Image (cartoon, rainbow, N blue to C red; front, side):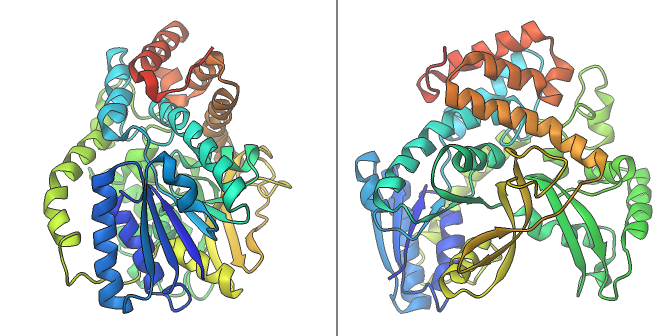
Length: 441
């Protein structure tokens, strides 16, 4: 029997998508599903929801069990074939609140703060010690399991697991699947969707749509560039930063404009406040989303947890298709986050966690060689990779100066604050996070 362990199962909606998908698969629908969390209420809610789905669409074939707390973690993991990671250490309150409110006092504003910037750095530093504990348990009780990481900051967490543990790890994100579809739809080019061919590579949240052709092989980029430029000239819409990327850098990238607005030094600038309006940049966007999600959860709880007739249709999430492919040997392609071993992307560092096409089969994850990125795209990626590598270094060595250096080299932070102010801000964040962060020396 296949065993799938879901870490952070209190993330009820995401658990529904991934494990509901597994119950929709003829290969996985009799699996043992082990739910793990440290929040008893959310764990129970997810178990109730999945029990309903299992009964209604799967004839109760899956075996679902719940494991609460660190003391039961090894039981949840024991003999697992796949481990899905969806934890959030510190949640919205207090940790995300801290990640946003403390930097504001030093004059630094953010949009999402979960992947890069000072918010992404802090999130990685409080999550990596937990992943270190996970890895130690996995090496003991299910050493052959594949670790499917969905938690942000993707490149920092996945890169840590790939470089500093023996766990077979791939990082998974939603942005590759939707990149070209959303771009073509937003430019009224829906007629080019069917049969399109594309190549996407770079790093998580900043992987580049390097090639896009229609079913007959015609290059779609000339028309895309023209329409994107015209749409930005016409005025405000929700994807202005990435359309400006197309204009200034030549290529579209995978993650949303509100994310990419803070991955560089170009758009959020206290000395040029008019830019946030010009490019329609929603400052403090992630805290707003968190508050809305918390408020909406009570309604969603009735629809999901207490709905005895609840069903599920298979989503486009990669996880179940990866498990299916590794189990059957039938090939499946994803955009995966892997270590740049052997120079899959030649002009990025070998120890960077990159996002490239990967072939999945019975042998596991097989990343594809891409070659060289356009020099300006590699340069943009490097500004983010610098921060990722230094943050991982800080987490591994517990040396505070590496946190300072990561923040100094972060393109948005470094463009807004002086070095002395950055040091003071980092110290204030470490103090504010208290026991959520390991001790740094």
